[in-house]
Length: 364
Ligand SMILES: [Zn+2]
Image (tube, rainbow, N blue to C red; front, side):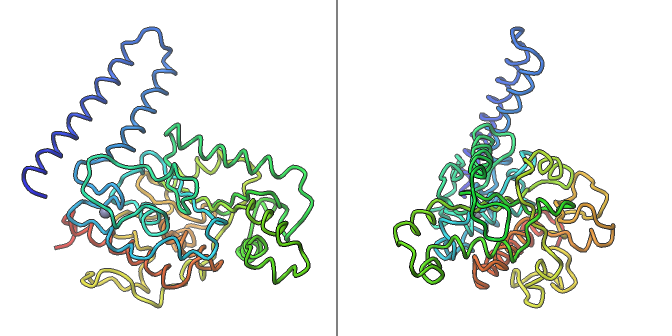
């Protein structure tokens, strides 16, 4: 960026922040509104501002790294390489406080697995919203932003509605057109789904498999039923505490998928990361995100989503992984993405973490 562009960007951002501030103050002065309505509208304004302008004038709108250390160029393969494209969709449900953070890794999923076209990336003052594209295989939704909340609610409503009147089974007590699975442990076997079960659901719904398994089935019927089926993998992105609250709000028919240690660590033997990465040994690292955030079982505000909230402290700490790692592990395990694409996502994630850390001055 030239000095002129830097100044422009600063001024643009300051003006937008000031405008937001004035709108918030106007709401405070509006005596016709109840305190609850004022609070709700303020929250919506802040979320909308965050979507449009991000958190900081010099943070990339796509990868959420600082602009000088943007990692968008690392997303070289596209969502076309998904095996279950049009069938499986990843929703990264991001808490509004998490949205836009340079320490966030969910943004890398949208960049590497979604239709968020990084090749056309230019330094822009306006953030685009690729989540409105319902065919995007990986969408980021901000919790608290009304239009994103509505998208998720519609999907949840749809999955609830379609469950009624279904009579065919693939081994899971759900056979509707939309199956929503959240990456989160479950203490209740009734709403749990295992990776093999999820894999079977995908294989049974894949139009490419229909002809092999049902050779006598009418082609048109197979195509119609397949085209209606959709599986949504929901990843909750926020601090441990916020993520737990978000999961608690999900309806009970949402299936929970827990990942075991070996699934999460599928890539441990292979190093990923920046070529100049300082001294991390991938086998000893608990999470790619570890250098940017404190971890631990205490549930502190800056603690990242972990995957085993009810486990013992030690187990808990071992199993903490960042959002990108968890989603990649699940997608790789069910065969939705191949090893090369999975490693590319992890590499981009690791590189973002390394570069942001260096940029913040934590490493010389
Ligand atoms: Zn970027």
